[in-house]
Length: 86
Image 1 (tube, helix red, strand yellow):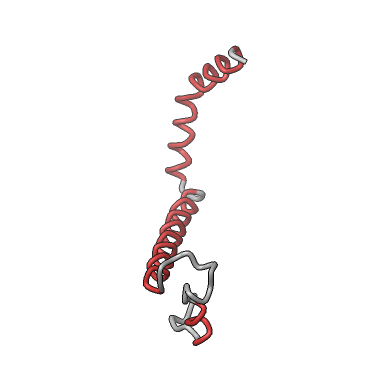
Image 2 (spheres, rainbow, N blue to C red):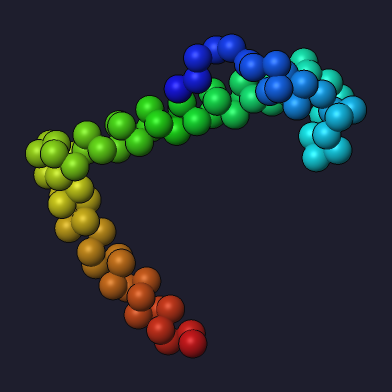
């Protein structure tokens, strides 16, 4: 996590006129891009946490087994058809 403050060197390094690798109009656009990226990263992290909790969820595992059993015949049929068309 960042402290929320920029050193003077970091501040000056965000000037697009000083760094040709920065592909934005100005600092405001750079901050907007950074915020979008950070929010997306936080959303991905929240999704990862939700999926991780599924690993120990007996209800989820029971439902997953039930679905796998229900679709087993269809899965084998799809594989058979795919193998025949090769």
